[in-house]
Image (cartoon, rainbow, N blue to C red):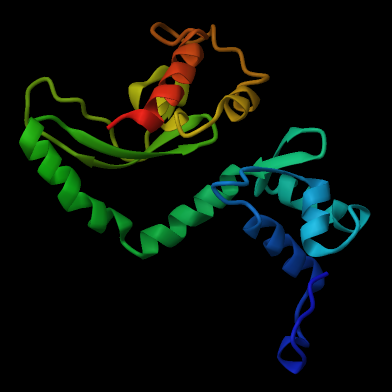
Length: 195
């Protein structure tokens, strides 16, 4: 376990400390980590963090993607939303989306991916007769909507395969067949080079 400073940390709870450190190990370059990587980073054995990892998984802060392999779970995002809401992020985004709406005369939406769903957290409604009007809080399967497919382009092929590994997509109405994930792979390869 990482060393703490002296008296100011006398009340530190080791298990809680390790659990939070595990969550902090994830970033844009490390989206999927193994229990061995957790242990190495914390300088402990994998056995000593087994219960912590199990608890984080049970509470959906971690999501198991393969044997002894994890990514951040949806609860991290949910808690992040609560924090961001307290910082009025929508107020920051609002003028930009409203300006875009005024330029294109179309409703504009802000959404984030939570698991396999796109969650709409803001809409700038255009007063056009045929405007798209998706209420805030709406959840739509990512593979079945344009917004969701754009969000999926942030994943590489391995992450995309892991996300949909045990999911049947043929129960969704057109245009949401399984082949759309293949289209998304093509988008993922194109997106980084777009100007």
